[in-house]
Length: 318
Ligand SMILES: Nc1nc2c(ncn2[C@@H]2O[C@H](COP(=O)(O)OP(=O)(O)OP(=O)(O)O)[C@@H](O)[C@H]2O)c(=O)[nH]1
Ligand SMILES: [Mg+2]
Image (tube, rainbow, N blue to C red; front, side, top):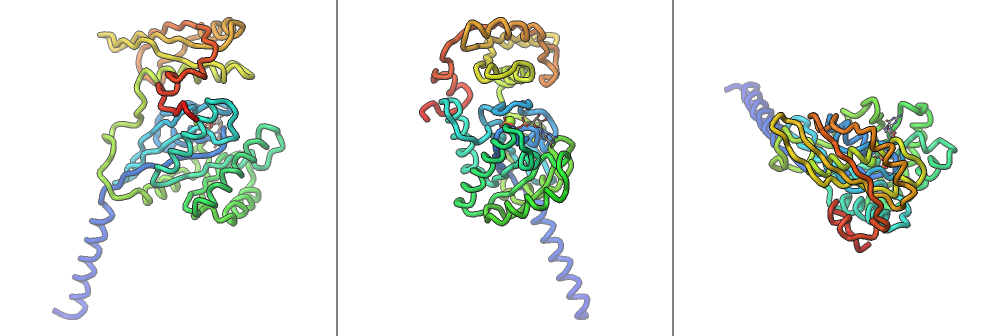
């Protein structure tokens, strides 16, 4: 054997070994945290390629962690959508923020999603969002700088602003990698997905490959109705309602009969919700014909009932 042939064989074996390593299965959890309205749920849906979490233009849409499963080659990324992190006041707010922190500490990878548009805006809501993002960055510095920073909504901001923002945030020492995406149009999302895949630990896959969501169907159905209501009712009303699926009966023809109760805090809120409920348009996500029966009840103080929290996996004692 000549020297060069030996070298060739060694090189071939090395490359075979590399490809074996490259095709080893990986799986893990990537928690997406950020200020309310940063686009976390939109990003999770985009990475998964299906709607697993509800999205609205209002803050505090996501109330409890929602998982979505994405595949990238041999890597399975379980994305954990979390409620926005802000300065909580009510018990429900505190439980939501607590859940976001818990998911971040349990995950293999943490992504801090920042609304790059809010960072340059002077609108009160956007300023609050920028302040919340800053508070999160500070807490991440203390955590040791292993977080991925993702600037979102780049479809709305100029490049100069983006570069300055990413530099300013990177210099805090909170992050070890920066991505710029539009969860809305998908720009930059594939690069982020590949980076998440590369950070997944070697592991058997955690979910069957055809599964994208893991919310029980009753809870998913309640979330869809809550989304529709959030999109249409205003001011404090969205934060004062909750939806419960009381029956979900599969029919022989593949359709389902779904009964839900929408709870509001006060009698004065009932007529508004009743009007919206009449529009009934569930079904699109559940991908089947839905016969929906809604009722609206007043349940003063539902936010102080333990059962509501345990039902969606939130801590009551916060
Ligand atoms: N233009 C633009 N809008 C976006 C983008 N990503 C999200 N949005 C919008 O931002 C709003 C908030 O999106 P969500 O995904 O609900 O945000 P979130 O971070 O999950 O919000 P919470 O659950 O309330 O914490 C929605 O109106 C989205 O359509 C983006 O990349 N570009
Ligand atoms: Mg959300």
